[in-house]
Length: 88
Image (cartoon, rainbow, N blue to C red; front, top):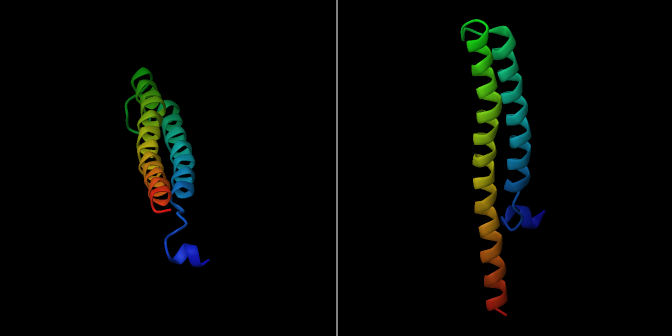
């Protein structure tokens, strides 16, 4: 618990992974609602295309955003390990 309060243990990676899963579910369900319910995006083919765009492009962009966050913390871990090796 001491590492948690001294910020030696990072919870951000776990948090990003959980938020990624929640985002994928929300984007996919939203896309399906748009595709089959219209949701003010027109009727038929137009709503289907918008919904498909939300599912495909939305999930792709969301993945890239989450990967960028994880990359920042991976860089931090590498710098920290280099620093520990140099300080010995």
